[in-house]
Image (cartoon, rainbow, N blue to C red; front, side, top):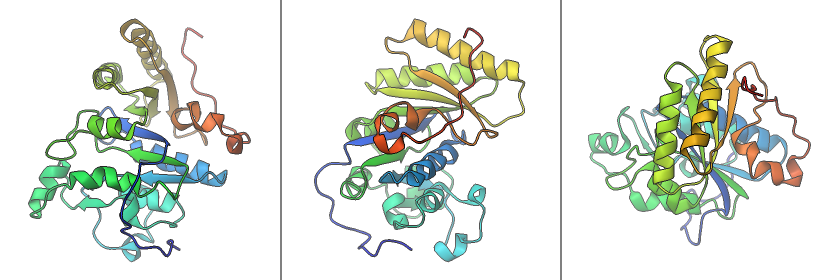
Length: 268
């Protein structure tokens, strides 16, 4: 059951002090798949976590009744996080700006005679300030993908003050895409918490491990504070990456978590 609270409380104050901002090297790299798993893991440990997708396009029509029988993989990002949170919070808190056409958010908004509400991008996060201790935010696309007429994902992450988790599809081409995204994160003045290489394909173990090794090697050479790089595959029940590497690892409530070890690079 959703919380019996008004879906549009007047935002005031600041967003939750603790949080992470998930970005991808591209669209469809597994951000919401991984993010929703991390939310579920936190919920299992009774961590007061919230999930926030500021804006989404290409969303499903209809309300809760329309998606109740769907598999997680069939849900759009907002509904996936809604389910991960156990249905305790209204979709409007999780994903307040939703547009039907699969276009960049502002272009999708224009198709129905609207614009992305830039003030709501931040105010939607502030709404969570009294309802969670930790807020997981997922952007729409990559670091510099525009999410409104005047804001990119990087702009919103900077205003929220959250470090970034960068998710990349672990395939051929991942090295360039990851390093280019890390350069954009550094140029935007954002902190990077970790890179998660999401191994969704049937690529060889040699390719997957070499991607991780090359990204690690080049990141050390190119960046002052190179991030941890962790490979994850669908065969693992848990992921020692991203959300665990910083804030969650320091929380007493999470001490009982058991996560699968990351794939080790060849140099280890």
